[in-house]
Length: 86
Ligand SMILES: [Zn+2]
Image 1: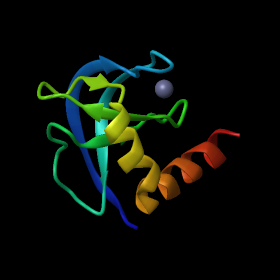
Image 2: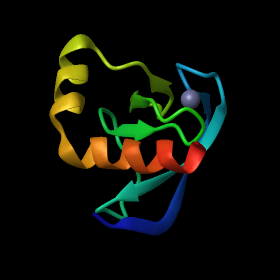
Image 3: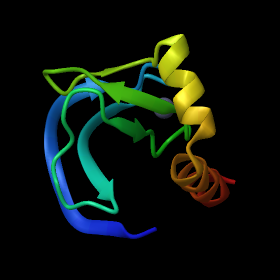
């Protein structure tokens, strides 16, 4: 797992869980900017959100949540962020 050194401006939207304003995204194992359907992790609460077409952030659907829960890379990132928060 490698975190990109490149940040992308996403326009301001809010974490759907803790309402923190977010306007940057940094890739894991990619330098690309996020696109519709990509997942992000809030740096404040560690919850996983999904990017809409306009790069605003929404909660995952039930099916997306199952994929997120089964994705080892996402879970590893969440643990790393949650460790840094505690
Ligand atoms: Zn949050």
